[in-house]
Amino acid sequence: MSNAQPGKLFYVIGPSGSGKDSLMKFARSRLGAVKKIIFAHRYITRLPEMQGENHIYLSHEEFENRKNQGFFSMYWESHDLSYGIGCEINLWLTNGYDVVINGSRAYLSSAVKIYPEMQVIFVSTSTDVLRNRLLKRNRETPEEIEKRLHRASMQCNIEYPHLITLNNDTDLAQSGAAFINLLTNSDGIRSDESDKFLP
Image (tube, rainbow, N blue to C red; front, side):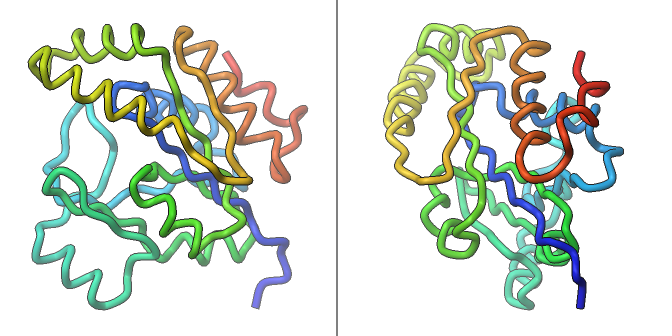
C-alpha cells in the first residue's frame, strides 16, 4: 500500500475543433518526462492516424472483451466508436501521480460519480475561430460544420465545482503555456520546477 499523497486527475474536454488535441500534444511534448505527471492513452476502436491522437487501437471485439473484464476505469460511445480509459490510472493516482486524460463532455456526469475530486479543464473557442478551424481541416460540409457549432454552443453550459475554462483563441504557444500552467500549478509540480518547460 502506497503512502504517497494521491495524485490529481485532470479531465480535459472541448468541442471538435477547439484545439484540445493540439494542446494535449503540446503539453505532453514538454511534460511527458516529468516524473509526477502522466498523459494517459485512450483505447479507441478507430485505426491510428499519423496526425491524429496517439491512441491505442482495439477492434470492437477486443474492446468489448476488455470492458467485460473490468480493464477500463471509464468508457463511452461516440460517433459509432468506443472510447476507454484504462484502470491503470487508478494505480498511478494512488501512487501520487497526476494524470491527464482526454475526456468526453457527454460522459462528464458519469466520470464525476467515479472521480468526484477530478479537475475538469474545458477548452473553449469563440464561434468564429471554431468555424475557421473546422473549415480549414476540410472534413465536413458547411452544413455539418454549422451543426457542430450549434452543438459546441450547447456544451458551454457546464456546471461543476472543479471546472476551469481555458480559452484557446490564441496561438498554440500562448494557449499551450496556459494549459501547462494549469497542469503544473495545482497540488503537484511547483511552478518554479515547470518554468523550463514553457516556450
